[in-house]
Length: 251
Ligand code: MF3
Ligand code: CO
Image (cartoon, rainbow, N blue to C red):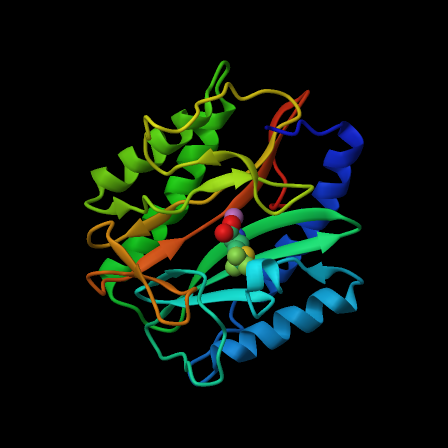
């Protein structure tokens, strides 16, 4: 069931999202070769609690950290570790959820560390573009949820990339994962509701340089590409207000 939010609830989610935007902004230029993924998590965790908010991923279905940090062929849900060291040329996806006064935000960005291959830079840029293509599709009058995945997949394919099939965007705001599911392609077996005022959801293209096939590591969380090729991930929380679509996790 899709929970439509009141203006007051959207204001709460907006504050949570703006906080998260500031945190992700502050990571720019801060991720350096030699750091571990745990260093990123420690930074984010203390940043959040200092502002009297809570990291909403921590303990969510047993996830053991505040931050999902995924390097190169890791697509999503990477568990931060002191043993995972970041190198020059890596791409590092940071996916965070904040609970501020009961309102949940969800946003992710992929950061390029130092000098990456041109093909990797293209992957990151196209994935960011896919996010904005999805947002644009959701902004059209009479749009439906699956118009988002249609636009995302079209742009990824046009650039020679594939999209994640096994994980989706989702409603968000009062819970971390609410209805509806928002696939990054057109999925005929999923619902396709009309987008309307009061909806708040997370659009999150996960784009693979190789095929869409994935596997899950023995830690039961980390999702990696089956072919070992890199993947990128960008995510925004958006709301449909009386003024149209607003990207909440952007300032
Ligand atoms: N942004 C992630 C998602 O939508 C949040 C995952 S939290 C975790 O799937 F705890 F499940 F990792
Ligand atoms: Co999400």
